[in-house]
Every structure is written in structure tokens, then in C-alpha cells.
Image 1 (cartoon, one colour):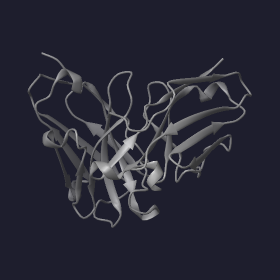
Image 2 (cartoon, chains in turn red, blue):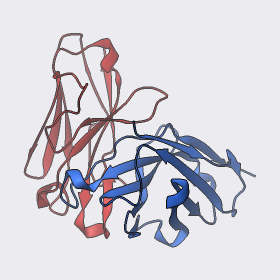
Image 3 (cartoon, chains in turn purple, red):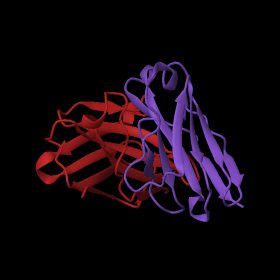
Image 4 (cartoon, one colour):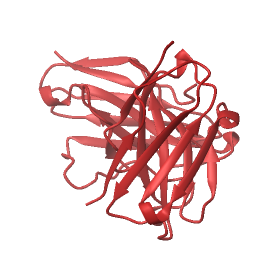
Length: 112
Length: 125
């Protein structure tokens, strides 16, 4: 029952730029709560990619960037590489769900 | 280095109770701001947050699963236990535990890092 909506899939050729949207509502992203992004490589656990809307943990390439505006957030990958082929999830907090942390529906990035 | 590892049965029968243990190292759940959450992912589907327990023993549950979940901690053993009652085949999923460090952001703005490797639980008779 994801309350954050993402496109099921995006694709791009190596070197291109792709963006993934994460659309919420006034009780989560629109209420001002931060958005975080995770990368899940095939067969592995999710890994923190972006925190606090636009911050990269140590070790994450600067090809990955995040932004937030209104009730939505976006993850951009510039200079797409084959190793970026993975599932990506956004995450935030929803004040209407009694302290619930919520995830997006997930987006599969395919490198053509 | 912070690490977490999930353990529990790989197979449970419908109506049974599932008990999962998260054993962690590199931090203490008695330290202010530290929390551990459980998240699950059915095969081929999205992540779903389940529950969270804080250093001060505050507990939070998914509204849709609240009646079936119980989260607890054993600080001396560095473990967090999740029980889920009345298991059903739709509960088949990989179950992950992950740390939250509330000292890094305001309440409500927290993220999960790091995650355990996950444990696959299949519900079938």
C-alpha cells in the first residue's frame, strides 16, 4: 500500500541522463518531510543513495542527485552506467498514518 | 562498522506466528537516538515498512498490520525481535531490519542505514 508513486520503469543509453519522480501528498512530502532514496541491485538489500532530499552518503558518486519541490521529489542519474541498472525507491514519512515511514512503488532503471 | 543480520525460519505454515530476530553490532540501542526498523519485500514487489523500536522503548507499527505485529528489544544481546501472528501466503517476503539514527535529523525526517542482508520467509502448508 505504497503512498508514494514512482514510474514503474525508466531507461536510457550509457552516458545519458534519466530522472525518477516520486509523487506524494500533503500528508507526506507536501508536509515538508524529507525524501530519501535507495538503490537495490539485483538480489541484494537496498542501499542508501540520497538522504535529506539531496545529500549523498560518502562513497555515492556525484552522478546521483536528488531534489524536492511541493508534493514531489526526483532522483537524477547523469552519465548513466551499466552498473546503475537496479531498482530505486523513495522513502518519506506520512503524518496521517500514525508514525508510519512510507516507501515509493519503486522504479526499475534499465541501461540500454 | 555497523552491521545487522536477520534470522528466523525460512518456512512457516498458514496461521502460525513468525518470529524474526535482528542481531546488530557497531551501535547500542541504549544510546539516545538509535532505532531499529523492520521492512519487508514480497518477491518482485515494493518495500513495505512494518515496525520500529526506539532507544527509549517507544514502538511504532504499520497501521495496516498493527494488530498482528509486536516489536521488542534485548539491549544486552543487541537484538530486536519482530513477531507477526496469523501468517498467510501473502506474507511471503524477504524481511529486512535496518538502523535509524535519529540524531542525524529531526523526527519524521529519518532514513534507514544500513540494512541487513534480509531473510526470505515463505508461508505455505
